[in-house]
Length: 302
Image 1 (cartoon, one colour):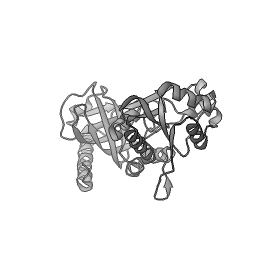
Image 2 (cartoon, helix red, strand yellow):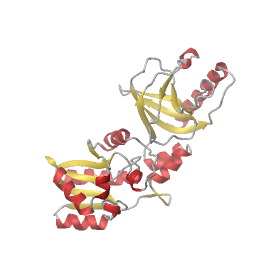
Image 3 (cartoon, rainbow, N blue to C red):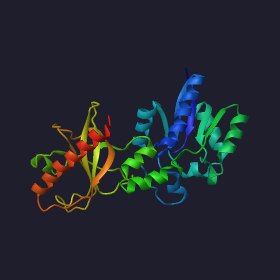
Image 4 (cartoon, helix red, strand yellow):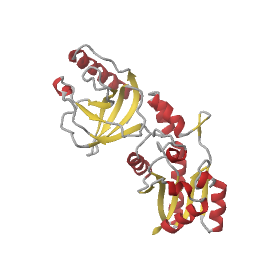
């Protein structure tokens, strides 16, 4: 394998959904054929934040995007560039020339709707023409549809906002995920006999519908645990009105503070509710845990 030459996928890849999967799999195939490195070039912030002046709430943080690409597609060379005003104003040919100069690209893969350069004037057909002129291979991946719906990050964002994790997983090709460091909380779960871990959604990332979900939690050592996860403001135990992610790992005991964990969301179980006391909350957690275990048993999800 030539260590420096790359087949490079271009895109933002928010969520890393099944449309992106077609693009990333093609990137791996081309790299294997040519004996070069499969690579991904993406941006740290969504271009629309600067171009349109409105923040796009994302499915994943940049670190989570990279982790999904590595874990699900085995592509380790993921390059982030900062979408700055300079990048936004750059003519499309200059963007590609710089790409070639910096990364020694021998083949480019992008989606049918990818645009780049000043005012988004760089389109797939112009990219293909430029590649031919520079003796570089090029694949343009057509739209991927599921049940007649074009797969897009925009559509999946709505599903997640609505809490429809099962449908989101169909369009993503994997469960919606959150990775974060476990933070110290009120330690009330431990006192109630249902210890929990506390996490937060990174700034700029979509917060799903508030409520309780059937989830799986993956620890640093690779072990997985069925869990119930509450997204919301924890009205029974706090009046701060701060959104947190609190998970009870079923049949697990141990201190995870400061550890990096990942939550995969599978199904919305119920709305977040304020209970009259900790006893009632503890009893509900037991019911939620039983519902989550039953869900995974029926679904036979590995």
